Image 1 (cartoon, helix red, strand yellow):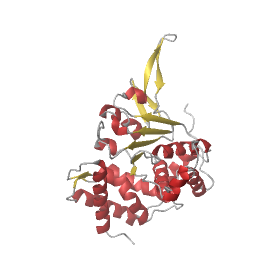
Image 2 (cartoon, rainbow, N blue to C red):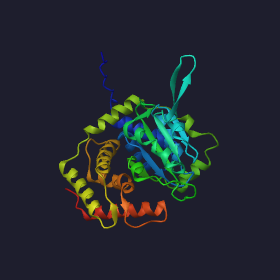
Image 3 (cartoon, rainbow, N blue to C red):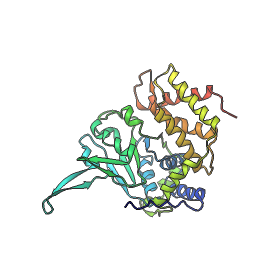
Image 4 (tube, helix red, strand yellow):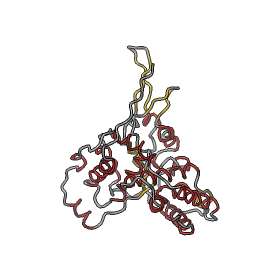
Length: 323
């Protein structure tokens, strides 16, 4: 007989728990409150995060700090051109003592997985993440293995370097709920980092929430209210993107759903149980710009990203916000 599934325990004060989590991460990710907030939004929405930025601005630190703050396991995968799918997912090994094949899990089996420089590996290896990111499970030798929740992929890529890289196809980009930038820190924040000493600050972090509570908060996102007029507003933006002369491919139904759920999670991170028009606007570029395909060809990832964000912003400007 199947055992009944016990309901996950929601923190007594969800807003306070999220705020503690946010403050804990900000202890080591200095001067980037919006990047931290968007990362938490992505986590609570059960999505995955793509960070496009130059090296050394705190992408790895953000992923590690999140893992330690939620008391979860963390694995970093350095993507290279010779990396194979089995290096990520795992492999079945024959055990001579038992006479059976045993599955040895790869680094993908963790609560937070950093896919560092994901565009430096081949499309075959990139595609090995698709099932895991979509279904939180992997299939090996006709067996399906569930990934322990919460499962959160943080992928990075450098938009300025193109030599030896393999651009992510649209199907892979669409699996990321949000795409963000970190950016260089402000003067005072960078000076604080400069004079903080040589010790790794992430090692001093302690968990302020449990993985089970994170899962409960993810379930709680569904309860954040979205007025009917706001849902209609979102659908109008989606329809307009499909008619835009600047886009060869507009926002897909999956993209629209990601934007909607991302806005719910963002509202929860902001301490509210309802979505506002500003939530949808704030999430529009991070949730939608990487899902559209431009009519024009751009010569760099950075310029393509900026042009896609401009098109999304123009659509938002033309459509009146419901009162």
